[in-house]
Length: 94
Image (cartoon, rainbow, N blue to C red; front, side, top):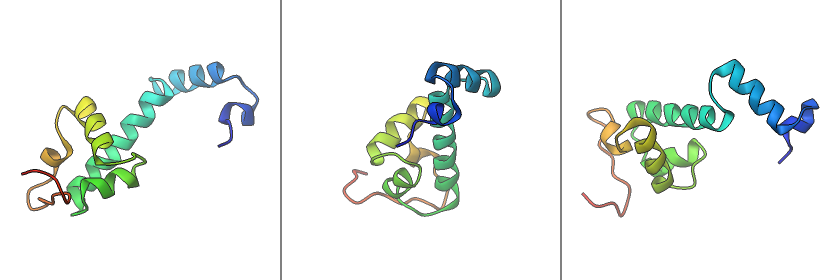
């Protein structure tokens, strides 16, 4: 993967500072927030499994998404799902 900072001719620290000034939070925090927001949208709009949604928003698996989702949203992805979209991942416990 190419280094975005090198591509624009600044240091990684300089790029991180610039992003933080412009969006109000560090790049990693901003990226995690965007990914969780996308996951929340998909949970509310689709019947896709948490595992499928995890992969769509660049998490390795349902567990990784669940940990991040709970940390940022205070609830599990399955609890966030809109009524009528109760889909369980294969192998999950009730």
